[in-house]
Length: 307
Image (cartoon, rainbow, N blue to C red; front, side, top):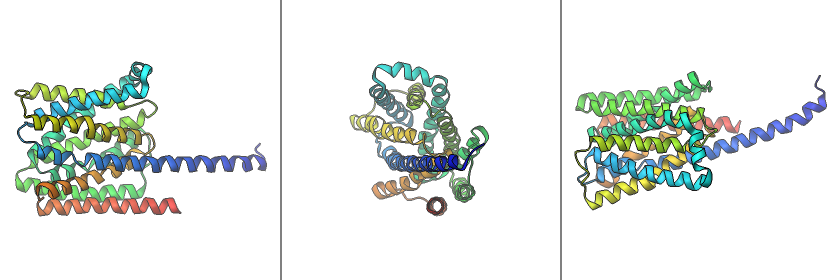
């Protein structure tokens, strides 16, 4: 039978563990926000491409990402790189194609509708991630998170209506498919967080590069486009995916994707600021609803952490 002294010893240990968990969670949130800020430039870079087709963009960007992630993985694990890749094994082979095909759908969505519609529609990721994590991982989803997801979905619905009316429904469908696939990828990351899932990002880049290369009519693009796409994949995408993968070790799937929604809000702003691509009124309304959901959820989390 436990004695009072046992509880006196155990209580501080539990408090220390909870403090450490909160610190790791805060670190994870910071990593997600940095990832979102980096990846929010995706739409702008795509719009700045001069002549390359969407399939050529996919091929060169993904090829650069594959090379950069392989170098990063090798530097991280050095002599154990091959062993660590094998350790990721089936998890990387499952998660990689999910992210790879999501990347294909994302690029094609940008090609068929505005950056705002693409990003705002793709911001439904948290709903799918929360449901998948609840079903497959048993991760608890708080009431505030569910409310935020519900409000965000209302915003998505407004933008889908805009897509139907403006003839960009295909782009919205591709963006929604991106959300489902990316949410599945996130849940797989959470399930296998004991291994280095950068291996999955390498597999994803190889998958999307192969699809882009197969579908492209040719590989001839301008030097400007080539340099831009290599920098996009080898620098920006590599950094963004690395930060997101690291964050997945410490942040639940629903929270991970909901925080990542900040990318969907910031991305259209860059496109409007630099090349003056202005979303339709309904898209702006839907984006405002999504942003409100994210802000409300963040305030709720802060209040809960303070109490």
